Length: 95
Length: 282
View: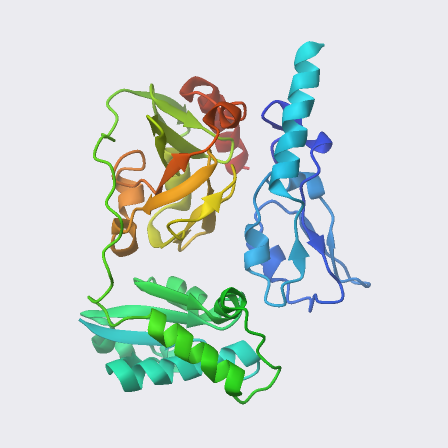
């Protein structure tokens, strides 16, 4: 089980996880072999690999994309994600 | 010092083919000795002599990084590393999908070879500030048989286990004691490019051990003004002194007040370490 909060913000409120471009993915599974947080899951049916647990993904980590030969993994923008986290913290601080 | 080169096998992908070409070009220009990854994998002893007393350059074709993984598996000390697909991107070159090196491919090989000066000929890096001393007082988190240390003062942390220490308009960043203990013996460090403008949480260097790989994510935004080149030869300094000699990069701060909103003091970070240490056990 990964952290359930990031900087006191509930993890499921933060949109940070990999997106697989299936037109490029060759299902080599290197990303899944690399990721220690079970973000990916292998399936018997197509697609053979999915982002099954996006909220297990470590916020701001993009290391799996580096293992991807065909460059099929992308992530949201960091500055936008930072801004959103700050906004949520501000709103929750006001309550 | 003599150089040995471990290229990826490069038979079935266009960037791999260029890894082999680059190895050949370095063998011709610098007298580097090429290591065959297949033979190395089958009988590592065959190369013991070649590797002793030589620097090791690993050339990966694509991000699957088979050559790096092989070197890590055999606990070889890597001195330099090249990733051909990344170099192509940096140079703005589109390598054709052919298993023979084309003209664009050879142009890229030329660029990469030029960037790889013979060992001992690398230019000196920017000098760094001497004001950063190794910290004195620590607070600790004990979990099972592990004791994780955090400097009690002057250091702030992000939740990605990286620290920052600010002096004036500059800061040093690195990874926490928790990271180095978790990774165990760090065998490779790849610094970021000096001069790069970075956002908070951008990568400032990467670390590898036999167990795992980690990108250090900067707790602050700004410009990288220096990187700890000592770690290239001695990555074990991160294990020995993560908050001092094991620093990773020095940053000219851009907006520290804003960055601080997403940073923790040692006490708050120690709570995160407690949680992560418990999770790491399960």
